[in-house]
Length: 244
Ligand SMILES: C[S@@+](CC[C@H](N)C(=O)[O-])C[C@H]1O[C@@H](n2cnc3c(N)ncnc32)[C@H](O)[C@@H]1O
Image 1 (cartoon, helix red, strand yellow):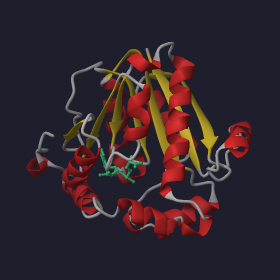
Image 2 (cartoon, helix red, strand yellow; image 1 turned 120 degrees about the vertical axis):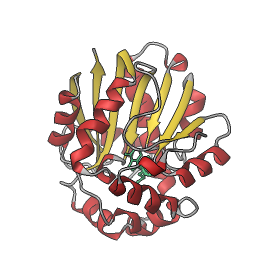
Image 3 (tube, helix red, strand yellow; image 1 turned 120 degrees about the horizontal axis):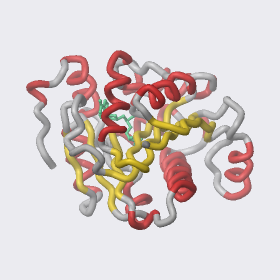
């Protein structure tokens, strides 16, 4: 892990990083408390989104097992045990040094780096797929364009940028955000806003699908959820765009 240059961090970004530092040991507990009314645990949502991401990747590329993935705002690396066996490599980056330390302890084969939230610490066109899961709503809105441009910059031509976000159209999602201890400052993005950010960053074929309209129960329910993807009511959504 590279220690981030937190001395040069934007103060608002620093406050966000410090907030998540405090949850490096209790992140899952905080999410589980906020979603307890649903009878589901964070693991079910993680598995559903990891499966969705792997299906999305498989729909764009012939050989997922050779691809390099970057998870921006990876937190404590919850997704990586599910993703790493299915692809060539996974790297994770986050502004929270404590979360990166926890992720490193949990996933020793994944390469992790902490950074300042401004410039992703990778050369241009380094990764085949760059994604972020429930991160943008924690980034100050005026920094959203920069954040997505950086995702695009580090993705190779022909690669894929994927953003998962909470859907503000869904009342249960808004309840979870209200009840989640680390979501106090969250600013939710509409599907249209996220599509516009990817388009403005230069991504092409940008599209959005609702996910998790139904609870993450696998099997038949998951298949049914796929059929509801065009309706804008999912608890979360996925926006993807190709890099030209
Ligand atoms: C709600 S957590 C999601 C963590 C992980 N993606 C997951 O779904 O388990 C949001 C994460 O975004 C990180 N974060 C906030 N601002 C960021 C930025 N500008 N760049 C990268 N990560 C950021 C936080 O430190 C935190 O780990």
